[in-house]
Length: 143
Image (cartoon, rainbow, N blue to C red; front, side, top):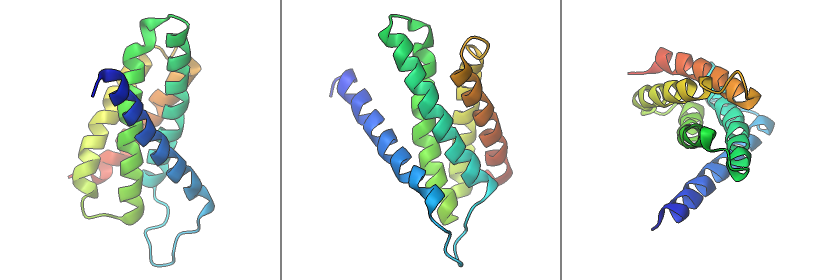
């Protein structure tokens, strides 16, 4: 598989996870389920702001501005990881503490990358803020 196909596949997975998770706002939690939690909410917010940031990066890349390439890569990983984090948090999975430790590192790396562009690009600032919040929530449950 070449790089282009890999990126398209990864983007497709992230998009599918985002679409699935976007519908979560309209679903009432089952009375016995975990329902909403700060970690679930922050993971979903990370996916949302990440998708917006990544679209912004892609627009800039299409215009020939390569300064946001690393940001786009970082956000791509973030949306995939936080999408899965949201699923595990919603299920109150036994794997959540270990996965949250990894997600915290991914969020921190994305925050660092987005902060490099935060003064010039509002989507990067919003993503960095969401990453910081999610990393903090991950730290509370991480193993």
